[in-house]
Image (tube, rainbow, N blue to C red):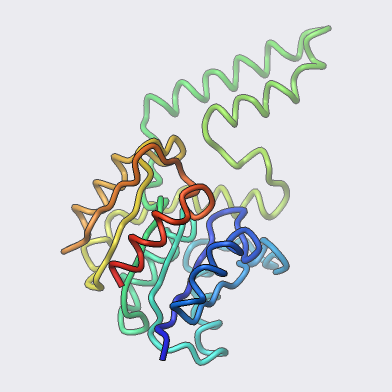
Length: 234
């Protein structure tokens, strides 16, 4: 009987974005990958959710589909949810794999001050005649510079985004007692490698594997190496 693997995609990800990885993994695993509310084919929630609510959604899928102690694989925002689940409901999972997990959510004060200063200055500058036509373009460029998905959200989804990026989970990592593998891209500019190293130190017994010359979406651009590391660990 194949081991069960549960994938939690990152922000903006879906079962469709993991399709190639799923096709590969189905040779060795029974793979489960559900669209999170607000992404893929799943409608957004009626309220402003945080990590806790998304975690409960995943647990409901486990119960409804009778999924028993799967290997838990979380990427980016999905890694944030996976870390929360592993720390609070360890009996429901057999192993934990984190890929570019967004566990540290505290923005360094200096970076935050600079970003806010730029945003405020830009707002004033681009309100001037002739320059105001460039305001939307520059706003989008500024948020891209800050590695933020904020500008791609609106309404309730933007409120959800603002909530989850303020939920730092680093303080619960010591509670995780599952066998844990952390896989990180050496040149991940969205979530730097130093974060992966910190996570590996804080989770007891965790193993860190680094994929050279790789960025944030390992399941997309480094599928073979990513999958082989995962399979070897399992």
